[in-house]
Length: 388
Ligand SMILES: Cc1cc2nc3c(=O)[nH]c(=O)nc-3n(C[C@H](O)[C@H](O)[C@H](O)COP(=O)(O)OP(=O)(O)OC[C@H]3O[C@@H](n4cnc5c(N)ncnc54)[C@H](O)[C@@H]3O)c2cc1C
Image (cartoon, rainbow, N blue to C red; front, side):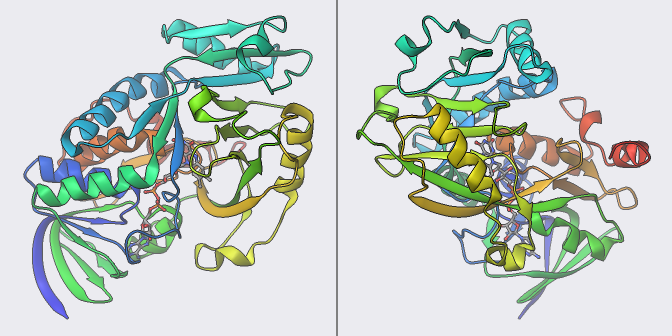
């Protein structure tokens, strides 16, 4: 057992958020240790899998603003690591033309001058074959959106962190955190002392925060990641410029349904439901609810006539949700040298680089580059008596 090793900062959790935070800290010449409970790479949290959507199509300006810089930081990592992490495909957003959310997304894109094309029911299938636009639905394409290569990105950022002198210890579960001016972190293999700690433990966040006397209103849900087979090979292929897509609301559900072109598994299109059933991260596969798959089957039958409406492959991933679906990005209310990044699931991957930068700034006591009020812990207290 290694004992009493000292670091400027210990980051707990080597998913996308922890890996980018560690990389930023190392760039700021901090002696940094990144701890991970499983052997890397692993498929037990939220950051595994080959692809994620990157987009600016949001209903809030602050996400669009952050994405400007996040795109730049993704490109910077591509240059540093010499790998391709992003592929432009465009993002098709479809939803009831008069619904609040669809209108908000369209307006936010317009207001922020994000390149976009509005499609009509007359020209829709010229641009997007093999998709049925439901009557009453609008459609816009956010031109610069696309696919991020997730597994590759994680590998790249962890390698860059190590090149900067950072230390990764995987297969080391954090068992205890003792707060104080110097924080003591005990793992299954050692004891570390650090001036600062960042907790980016994804679905396990509350388990770690319990050591610091804090619990957040986080819900962990299992997502069935479904792949659907093309009836005619290539019809939804990334190489034929089929876009990523979001259906904001449908006959089948008020919750988003989203998908990516056939890419990682040729001939299979990834389409998922944007929420799932409650799960224990250590017993993920004991959650066997398939109601989301039933919703997706109806949607595929209705909107994607070129796909067989039965998933060919189903994988698993976890979302960690806050009540308002915004992230948690804050210092611990009692211990300012413990910083927390949590509740990213569902839509946090694309923000990895910018969240890493912000968590690094919080950890170093710097003024954050963005207004973090939507992400502060106190919003839970403020809203606890209302709909939350
Ligand atoms: C199916 C699916 C589709 C998604 N699609 C998109 C998308 O299209 N676009 C997008 O932007 N986002 C998307 N997301 C969201 C995005 O993937 C997540 O927001 C992001 O991966 C969360 O990363 P994280 O680092 O917070 O968590 P994780 O990846 O879970 O990382 C946390 C890490 O902490 C480790 N850990 C926990 N406890 C301990 C401990 N005690 N000791 C040591 N290590 C510990 C865990 O093992 C884990 O590796 C999707 C997510 C899923 C599940």
